[in-house]
Length: 314
Image (cartoon, rainbow, N blue to C red):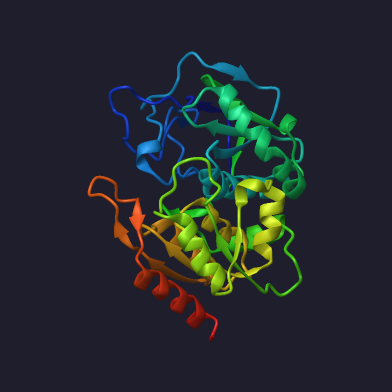
């Protein structure tokens, strides 16, 4: 942990001329104007990263009446919230024990603040229940700030898509896990997802796995607390690559994950943290232009079933 006095922040803004440039050090400076790094900001996709100014703000709003804990980046996207915001929040909450009156200070993604707050409203019940923090203890960097004192937690990441081993202990400290031995085999279905999916003929795939002992579940019908409880009951999950599988980051008792779709370094990093067996069945690209859309024939689906059964000794 480091405490800096004072600290100056630039707000996150996407460049119109350099869209997609990835900078992991954007806009946090010490008294001399030198950048403070590293800190717990990590992003999964370079194309979503906000480009930042390379010099400290000169005309910044002064906040000298409160102590702050820097809590990383608040992502309104669900998958990024699970894999980036919550890890950074957990790291910040470790410092909250030392600074109980401190306010958590988040960068927000480049979207307007009202949209970020709308997403935060959906996520806040989960944050309140598991981390004991409410909306009044969170602030966003939406303009240049000059802060008299700010504590920065050790990063939960070693590198992009790679979590620090200590983060596994951090998860256990902040989240309550079921004492029951998980026994369910779940298929994370997107058949009811109202937006674009990444696998072709989802109902055919869902039915195939249901006939082989997997219970189809639809995360979009559940709130975050219900999703968390569901994943605690699973010993094995299978489904299209994406945010549904990323829940395994918060299921250390989950034994194996089978992914349908494009290879994912992020999912591989999640499973490595907990020693979960991870297997990818990549299928065939639906088109040359889009590497994410996948087709699966009967032999590929049977291969996924066989792999899943083998992992459980069936």
